[in-house]
Image (tube, rainbow over all chains, first blue to last red):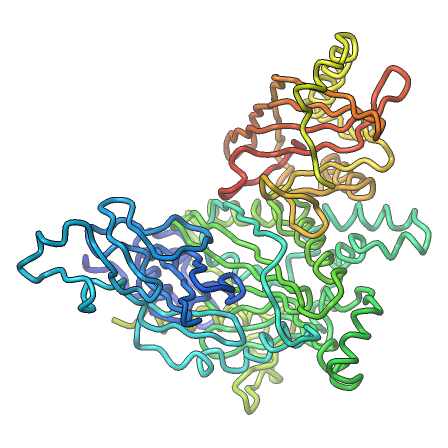
Length: 435
Length: 172
């Protein structure tokens, strides 16, 4: 590798971050190796490959990977690359196979990754390639694990155990799954893939940024408010209006919802309240939850409302509305944002429909919220190319006396705190500083 | 709602005058959109009308599967207000569009009381960050009202919908 012209640790100071972290292609290349290649990254959900031979091909940053469920029901994750000449074995997306056959020279791999057979094997009498002896199997990714069906992988072997790495953030994933009467969620309702002209870090920051909705999302919130005022009470229960109303919420509303900052850059915004906590609830859903958990536990599960949670660097999820977004960095100024939706197994279909209505409204490239965020990211990407001033401000609530880590290691913070970003950049500097 | 395309057998049943009027209606709609006449565009819809951009080619509904847009009257009202107001960051610099419509086929669905029109479109969208093109098909369900029509459904299938999609800042 070329000698770096900077020391990553020097780009992050107390309460400020150097602009180059968002604009320098060399830093981006190093992030792909040391951040996306150096820690646990969300890959997908086990319901995406429910049956034997089901696969899902995606990437961890610039590395193509292939998730497969074998006939032994075991989930495995490989680099999506033929061990012969290196062709990508399957295109991105899902499918079902008996075996993987390389489109170039026809090498055939089992769902366990083992090389099954090759055409004209006699040419390898020298013994270098011998199907069945275990050589030339698909290369497994170093670490691969599941937390309640959410699948994570690390390209580097030097990472803590998955549960330990998730730490207190586990309770947010638990809340995602516990909201299902059957205690299980599954991917449903299609995917949105939204192309952005900006650095990947804007997403993990903005999803926890409670100072922007009332400025950036007025354009959807205001018309919704005006229309709502003209409607009768019956029509006001329309979910779209309920979904858009909090986008114009006040600073004190967002401050009061609070959040948590956790080790490894993880965080969530919202707790006792969130932008999702004032939705009407389907009585059939409440009945199903009561039947499954009893009223007390149901209240406990549903009263926890964490707006947005981040498993740093690339997973953002909304437990109260059953969707997650994945950051797929492409270049220093190009990122694809994927939105995946989940069915709460055992819940009435109205729950999935609400998730879908929310996502169509908010996460779509033709939606009424996402494009305005994107425009701000574009302005950031352009503005941060300015060589002066060099620093970006992240010092809000830096001296908050209440921001003290609890026993579980999570620090309670105010909703509009910059502590989220300081936590992310502390993880960033730590990972980037490793050889 | 499952969207059906006009069948060849049924296309023959449409008289030239109706075919012409359907074509004129689609051109008028396209012109309103490319002229930024959002409210007048919205007036072309039936009260129960839907503007729909699915997220996949084989999508059957906008309720159980996510869409790029799935607007009933209320959502269209918000969308139109947002397009027209000066609040949206993404619309602050002027966004303009120009589209061509062709390959029109139409049939009459007597049982449902509407016409189905299938056309192809190409559209350029200009924003200050660049020009982007969109291509695909329109499927219109058109209810006859006097000698005019009202849109019961407008479905927009983008040809590249299986890939990642950038900002759609106008109405397709």
